[in-house]
Length: 184
Image (cartoon, rainbow, N blue to C red; front, top):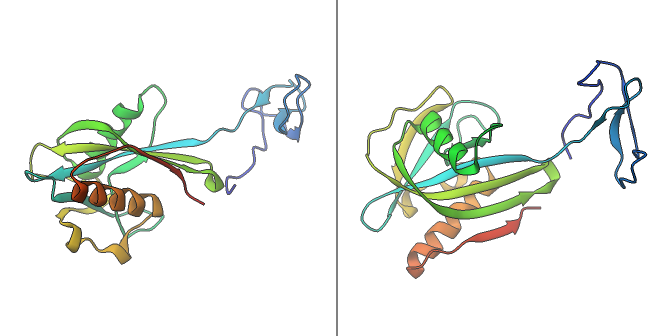
């Protein structure tokens, strides 16, 4: 994993050490050397949408990133889920924050485990209610694309590419399914 290890206790600020807890856990954990608090590190959830326009969903909304990583690349509206919200609420919030798009949220479409970076990505299908967008500071531009217009070589993340590929394959088939898989 690429995440930096915990160095200090969140409870008392003392140094932590990585070892097996005394409770029978089988994974090394960050344990405070003073107050013995065990700190668990868990995957982060990335939530977003595949917002579509048109009678048959032929247009997909993409956002041109204005932040790192992958500034200047295209992505679906998505981001890290916040505490206190559901995956659906997070996907709605991210779509509003990044694209300023008004949507009707559909069903969960893709779930991708990206274990090497400690993330789980979840994308919902969504129907755009308007072609008016008001992107936030994280987005340079929000634009609709047909499948043949998508700048495939300029897609920011593999999870976005895979989600788009599944969307267009399902659209051609005339039936949308749920896709869960691992990204190496």
